[in-house]
Length: 103
Length: 103
Image 1 (cartoon, rainbow over the protein chains, first blue to last red):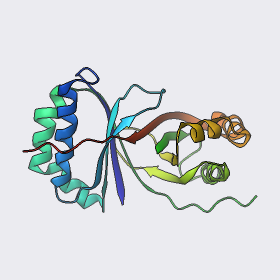
Image 2 (cartoon, chains in turn purple, yellow):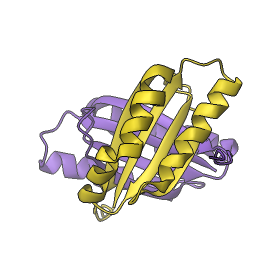
Image 3 (tube, rainbow over the protein chains, first blue to last red):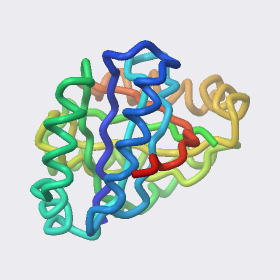
């Protein structure tokens, strides 16, 4: 399982209707095949200036690839993401198996 | 529920015993009261240069605060994190309730 996360800051004022519209439109990405557990989140940490995030899971790299190239994703990126997002950072991760150290 | 995540790059060579020892020692943070679902993860995205991450959940801000000031956390930060971590980024988030847009 791959967790795909992206944290971002919008060009819109916090609390604006344009902001809410963007966030709601992002939730439609859940309809793309392979996308699991899509959620829009509020970034609350003080050590970065991202305000929101999108988190989702993919079964494997193939599902993730199919999402990336899916027309609905490509359209969202060109019509909403690029013009409305001021700054973003993507972080993806997979589980790592480690036994706890014996103390 | 607050998800606390931190992604980092170590001073140790990838695959080294020192790297494994650091990652295993981080898992002991799970013993601190209030820490839920602690996991060590491998960062796989190509758009940043972090190699690993630690993810955990807290019931609320108070549990998160108690973790931050807990002696075991403070000791881990001073004895392992500061000398062994080359670069890191913390991202915290909470669920955001948004209804999907009607299309």
